[in-house]
Length: 121
Image (cartoon, rainbow, N blue to C red; front, side):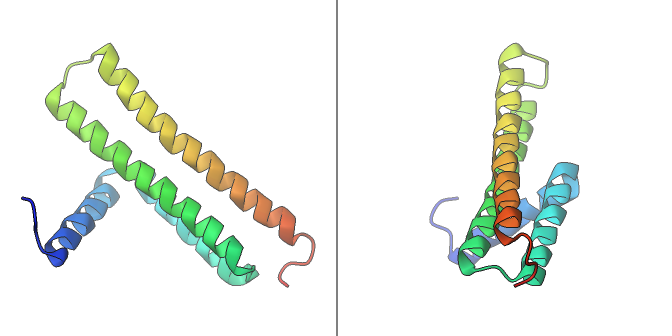
C-alpha cells in the first residue's frame, strides 16, 4: 500500500471525504456551514487575511471531523463492545472537533465585529 502514485493517493483521500459525507450527519452539517461561511465572505468581501483565517478554520473543523470519523470507525471495528477507554477516546476526539468549531465561531464573530457597521465595504 506504500509508494502509490499521487493520483491513487488523491483517490483514497476523495473516497474518505465521500464516505464521511455519506455516513456522518455532522460532517454534512459542518460542510454546509463552511459553504455558508464562504458565501458570506463572497458577500462581505473582507481583506485577504480574513479569508485566510475563516477558510483555515473551516478546513480545520472538517479535518478534525474526518479524524474523528476515522477513529470512531476503527475503534468500533477493533472493539465493538462498550469499554471505558474506548468511550474516553471517542469523547476526546469529539471534544477536539468541538474545540476547533468554537475557534472557528470565534474567528467568524471577530470578522463580524471588525466589519461592523459598514457591511459590505
